Image 1 (cartoon, rainbow, N blue to C red):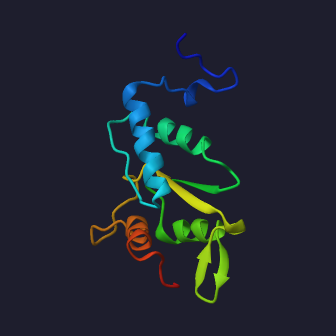
Image 2 (spheres, rainbow, N blue to C red):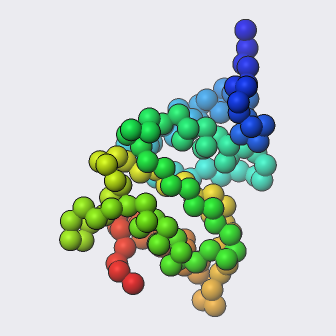
Length: 140
């Protein structure tokens, strides 16, 4: 018995299931089902991205849309807003949502990367905070 890696899976996307990884995936799925945001933290190279990618790969595509944002030092709030709005469709005059009546999971990788501005804030993170806290943002 034991675990056998899927033959078509690239090595960089493999993670050996352990009690901890399965426990974490279980909790993340429950949070997604409740539409609650969560943050996966840990040291560099510990498999956070691969774990979340595996979770996303396991979601039913007819129910869940996926949007991955890879942050860098050059990431700005306008780009983040444009990418997010590009994954949504207009539902009413001032409401947007995922197309096809699906739910949308937004995965942000390297959340710590955006450069601080002259005031010490990170505008892409402020945009995400506003979206999570208020369910949206105002037009620019």
